[in-house]
Length: 493
Image 1: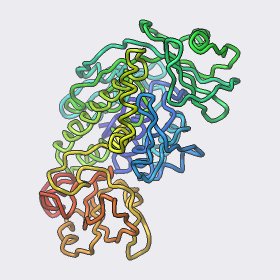
Image 2: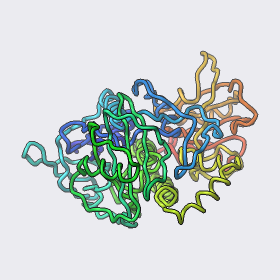
Image 3: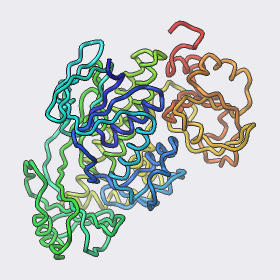
Image 4: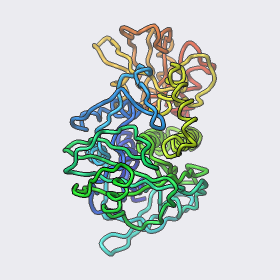
């Protein structure tokens, strides 16, 4: 084999996966058809969930300066994200290009082989591996890998070549996007219904304004290239009355509200992550953030299987967990599409939802949904509120000094966090020390409302989700360790 894993696509999903695999010691080759980073930024922010992911891997410092916000929206209706009491606020001024640059540097430093100007032409799953035909510099070569992951976007070559079903609905409307210099527009971060359409304005770094504009009742075009800026400027003036034709366009694009999801995230030795697996209206930047978290879920599982720690059954949980997240993503973005792009007929719905958001329970539910904090995986039954959820940031004290639950995950390993100094519990986990760090600590200043209050111990997967907790888990610790990390080292694998 030329590589344990070949990833097609060097966007956020592909680069995040490459970094995760290298962190776990797995060799990986990334194939990207573009000879260099495009600098384009479809996404311009990171949700609270992704901020937590990046903090767990020590990546936030690579993003440079950025602004955060405690406000969000659902379909243009404002949401106070502070109801989540999270350790982070969402980053609103991080262009996708900056995210990609940070992830590529991280993955490269860890040893990922990133090959730009290499286009995937065809693939063949041979049962014991995958053969990838690659074109670069007018030459074709073959690369062999044990697994192939398609992270190559909504028009994925890998998805089509591997025969994944991709059902859903075609686009019914089209939005035009432009990043502009030389204009000063009033921010409309959550968008505004105006003049028979929708407009949005966001201020980015470097004096750039991002505008998005769409007109209701217009059939989406089948475009093979980006629209001309004159088309964007004409539509903007027609809806808003403001002339922006003098501006300098940095980037112009178009997108629609097509909604599709593959029926399976894995077929044999071929897997999909990110936009290759799901496309939708990019409401609130959820697409890029969900794509990053697809890879965060997959990386440690794929590495564990390749090391021989766990069986391929662990890979099945990638589909069961992330397909459900993707399904929910499509549902909430379709709902937001009705609110954002609907005409006067949608106004009663907006009014009712605006009333409901005033209730704390509703605001919390929607805020958690758009931030990625509503996810709860099926890790087995039990009454502990942490089971299946991401462990919130905990400030900890160990025998060697201060740390945090976030810092304990930097190495990308599992963690058994003993909060009650239980020597019996620690002895039970000794057979997994090669894959799971066993840490005894006390949680400092834990507020009463914290879901961790009253919890004596938790088993954390490398992605920060709680796989077992005491008290409350119905299964015993050794069963949970075996399920997520494979048999103990002193047992046959």
